[in-house]
Image (cartoon, rainbow, N blue to C red; front, side, top):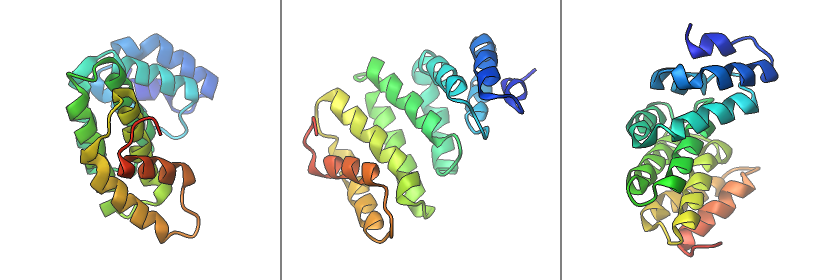
Amino acid sequence: MRLIELLVGRSADDQGAAARRNVERASLDELLDALDLEPLGEWALLHITYELTHRGALIIAPIAARLVARPIRPGTYGLTEALTELFRYEPDTAGPAIVRALIEGGEAALRAGASSHDAGTYLIQLADCARMAERPLLEARPLALAFLEKARGEAEPYRFGIDNAAFLAGGEPGG
């Protein structure tokens, strides 16, 4: 049985237990598909992202492709969180590809007309990567500036996303 079939229609606690027992045997596609389940309980999300992170750099290209193809999806947070956690463990080897994937996903989200809340996920994760690397991510600056411009036109922009975009636009680590 596919992982998503074990999670659909269950309570958050039951999803978490099913995920804990089955993530190691699930294929990469099953894990990625499961992140789009609505609702997906917090424990299931944590077990899935933990498993993705431990699969290493092979997750980057499939996640990047999904983020660009559908940048505003239920699983965006889980996908970007898995990339950011992988960055934590492999900043030198996987870091450039992860940053590129997050930037491309954020650009696709803005092109798709995402709100500052939806697009903010990408900026928050990029800012976390910059903080972990203890250096500015100058390559993320154009996305940060585009995000700030978009947020300016919203009645109720996502403040946390704006703060992280401003940090990236300024390029000073530690912000």
